[in-house]
Length: 239
Image (tube, rainbow, N blue to C red; front, top):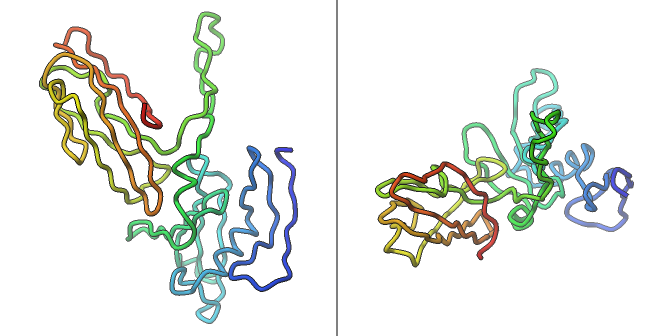
């Protein structure tokens, strides 16, 4: 059941030790502090910069996840507190990124594929909880990787917008976009959008993060301006 823990040990020789305590969350095994330390210490020193010969170090493990996916972990020298390296560890241990302040995050272990398909139920933040007429909060799972238009999906003729990818961290990615509705909107490969004429259009997008790949579609409505809105729609999958 969710919330229960299980201890794991191993006897055979493998590259990365699975030893540690795992907590069952959302019907999947989640990394613990012991597991996070173990996975970092078993990765190549060239990738982590962690070497006990250079001095004792500690792994600072956070209390909370980022976007319900990454644990931002910090390695620092035990005596001075100077930071050696920063890492992002996926909660299912499917990936480890090196994420120092002066570099783009680099995948040093695992795969980005589970991140691309993962969905989570957003935290309930309903300021109208005491209002009986207020709409019920949504408990539908939402993707943590999705695409959106910066100005919303309701555009006016002549308006310019941009398709951007939303990720659980500022990871490097490649985004490609295209549309068949070229009489309504103009879209270049990078996701820049210009509204040309009133009507409906669909933008098809593909995002690549390391070895992870995902396709999206965004439905866009273009008007002369009288009925334009600013709604931002999260999209997941191609319709």
